[in-house]
Image 1: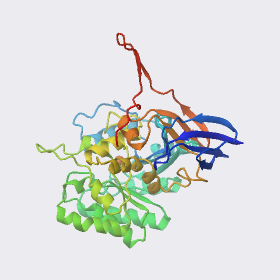
Image 2 (image 1 turned 90 degrees about the vertical axis):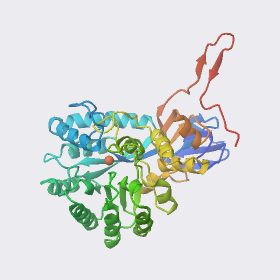
Image 3 (image 1 turned 30 degrees about the vertical axis):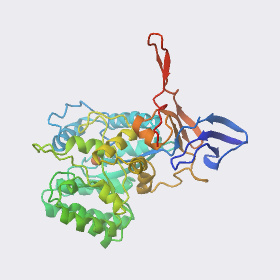
Image 4 (image 1 turned 30 degrees about the horizontal axis):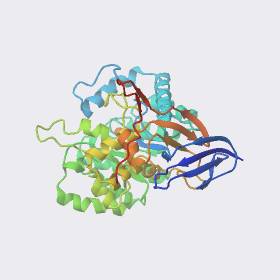
Length: 428
Ligand code: FE2
């Protein structure tokens, strides 16, 4: 007798007609046919069952604040940072908690299982930190929330940011963040990378730094981040987020840089929706896309997760917590159009991001935590194509969200029919 059995599932690795049994919050069996009884049995009807979506880069303290106190008119990163500075003093801890919990509900309904959120530490009251520590505890049974201490205004540029960032870590924020390209000079940016990596090494923490998020081809902070990672023995624990400058860098320089990143075991998190919107704003035509060199980094062996970064905040007015939107945009901007590349884009919002975040028990293997989604799609490529409807969200072996399948009733003259967006299969 199991708690739940999901029958007749397609899995992301290509296996079909598989049954998954859950017991005590864990995956207890993954077999062709499981005949045992269960408290609840769901027929997947051959559709995709995949581990939860993982968002490795988000800003939960700012989410759902769109329009407060005003809109970002220029659409640039820098106006967004300015607008956020106007919002910070007028928002309360309760405001942030309310918006963050609303977002978590939305995210879970979209099949999200884990989020790494940066939280601004340039605030003497640390309102965002207090709010998100509370939210992390509130949602822990169904959503893994990792927090990054993020000195948005520059850990050296802002006079109290260093003390406040250390206070945030003392309060229980998990990861050390930074923003070297926003410091006053290139050399202060490099200093900030060194100092923050030393803090992480002393405390045994991971590092996730906004790094070279600009169109400046001379921005070199990822080089420093790779160097400090190696010097301090932080291999595998460090992320360069955004890395958009790499798009514009000289090719010869990048041919040296990527092997340095590989040596250091630095992971990369591009944020396709945001950076296709923000980058190249100072360009006439041709206009740069600005997304980092995803294919080249991946082919060199660097682990890449796609992040969503923002939903309805000073930097981005759209978004719906759908990591399939993120995968779709990353696929297009990176021209990752082969079937293998598209399947990899699904991995970039699931298992690769889980690896970067160091999530325990993630996946569909025996003994993993029984967390998975049933999607209205036959495989991971179709899931991206359709931004597939979430039919069921299972956490710790229990259905915590469900939807009826989309079947649109058509009333065309003399030709009534049902249209199911997942009913068209390619001849491949
Ligand atoms: Fe970000």
